[in-house]
Length: 312
Image 1 (cartoon, helix red, strand yellow):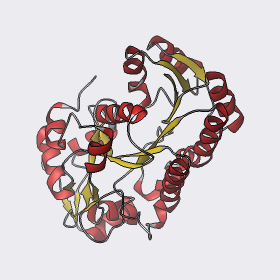
Image 2 (image 1 turned 90 degrees about the horizontal axis):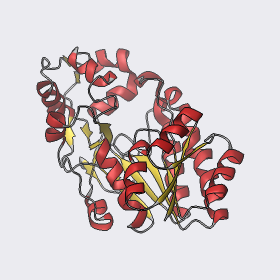
Image 3 (image 1 turned 180 degrees about the vertical axis):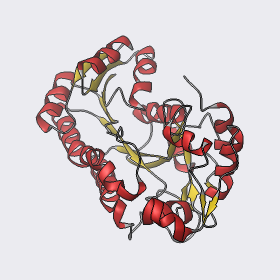
Image 4 (image 1 turned 90 degrees about the vertical axis):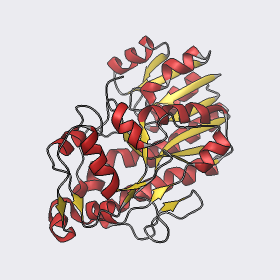
């Protein structure tokens, strides 16, 4: 098949080119720069420069490629992480999830593309009431914290547009592993080493994790399997912050995390950070296992934190 990867030098996209080429597919991968396009070439694909915020650039790249499958992995997450300025940090990514998604779907339709697979996210966007673990049938948060409202709206838009176009939206859990913030040398992992990531309140927020290589394998599965719809791509063990954070510290040889009351943490990480640490809900991967035939290599973050944080 001819496969077009928008964002082929990003966290997930960079892990797709080589295995897809090895499987016999013709892969076109985009980057914002000539240097990135050359990295796609080196991986066996055909690298092209594309501006994911420019509909004309997207249309030209897709029509030139005439792909059977379009995979949307466009993000812009190099600005660091700030709970209090969440929407500001994700502003460009949100544009890629809205205008970028719309432009990719329109170009794919014009090119006669049969399938589209789009990156989404699960975890804090889940409704923060009811049981601790949500499925794809459960609603997103109807009352998001204002600091993340635009980001949630962009996620919801990407999912709606994708499913309406007959595509698959993959809701990835929180990434960890090589090259990630929660990976060796990454910003979040180093903050845990320095005891700068505390357990807030009772630490009752539930997180669902996804090793970066499992995100890639799920994407490859979705290229050929599964009906149109939304799929949670997470491991088998959603866990509260009070459980996973001390285990992560132990796995990397750091001191146990501090405990901070929510009212103190709010001044440091804002309402959104407190909500994620105390009221977030996890996600079930049962649908992805059943319909995509996908199983995570790291079934639990426990194993992943011990053996999967290092370099590729």
